[in-house]
Length: 254
Length: 289
Ligand SMILES: Nc1ncnc2c1ncn2[C@@H]1O[C@H](COP(=O)(O)OP(=O)(O)OP(=O)(O)O)[C@@H](O)[C@H]1O
Ligand SMILES: [Mg+2]
Image (cartoon, rainbow over all chains, first blue to last red; front, side, top):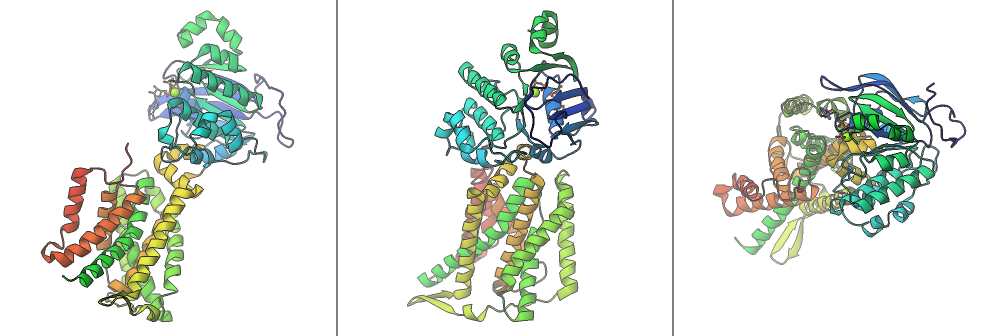
């Protein structure tokens, strides 16, 4: 078993193997046609853990995420969710094992209202609990309550991002994967997104966060991975990464 | 033309338009969501019409044929999607066109083997075989009014399902961002199967409903297919509201055109399509990209 998992100690429901990571990827390779994008990535996320994924533009972060959740087929390697081997599964089956996704660009359904976006995939978690309901999401994002009848295409960027996160929460996931959730947003809105992620973390839901803001990532994450040309160039606690000025410069350009 | 004739033609046009809507709605959903050009969609109305004929001949009544056309259509559509159509979602349009053209040939050959190549009239159910006196100078076929009413109810139901239910939300979301739907845990392949089944059921129902009006005959679906494509293009691909208004427009223009200017009968619909496309190249109800 991979020993590097910083298990947060939030014991999962009885009956599941306490030692099994929530998500475990082994030697994942992904291609777009002939281009070898993800080149042998190992990654494990424990229950309740917050993992950051960083790297310069085009290093394969989005491709890796899409490989993990079944949107882009992997060529070699394996992915398991909650101890179930999901390699080759349709994305919807992986999602139903408790993985939710907040994509780059937010993925809001423009032809659906805010309410419809939120309720479309609402369901209890794999443990049968409905920790997140429409009421709770609207309490966390009061802006969405004001916009509940609006079309998905009538929202500001920040509202769309809240909607995308709210929609992911409505599936009561064990793991939320967020790709560039604060990109292109005003500072105040970014701060609100980070506060929400802290709330999700406090609730015991694991997250895999792709973001380029080093300071916020250092605060939010239990562990950070840095991707360079499709391989993991660094993995460890945020403090170690931030302390290594040379690695920061080389891998992240900051 | 006197008022009574004009009114008759308007009602005929509406009734024809609503039947067209049943066909075009399935065509536009299948094309909008799965990107498949289903040339066999018109042939499915032929299957429905012959089903009505066969059931009418066997039981002496059309009543059983209508629910059966819907039920058989749903099952047939689901099987067709699962076994054949699904394999062509990622293929080029030309492959899809070849496949669905092959289906037309299969359906017609099947029809020929089972029922032969003759024209058959399908009797109007006796309870509806009379004229409703609407005013002292004007009466209208009860069966045509029945068809009108059934189509209006189905159009309303379809609209409610698509715009007011979760399943309808899945259909709209799948048309827009299928990957996102999938990533939220909703199997898009099931939505696609359901949409194809729905479209097939509606097309077969339209065929069964129109059988007493048009009789049944070989290749009767070809004309329906072409006009339905005109409706889809005018309304905006993938838009149910567009299919509805486009179908009414085409139904009225075609029917009134034939009555008022018989010389232009054949081309009125196409002139209308050209005019609409010049004005709005993506159709009346296309969503802004
Ligand atoms: N659909 C695709 N087909 C072919 N190549 C692709 C595709 N998507 C991405 N790529 C290429 O794969 C590489 C990795 O892209 P990816 O989007 O995974 O990087 P990223 O780390 O998420 O970048 P960014 O920080 O800009 O979001 C890039 O070189 C990109 O050009
Ligand atoms: Mg990316």
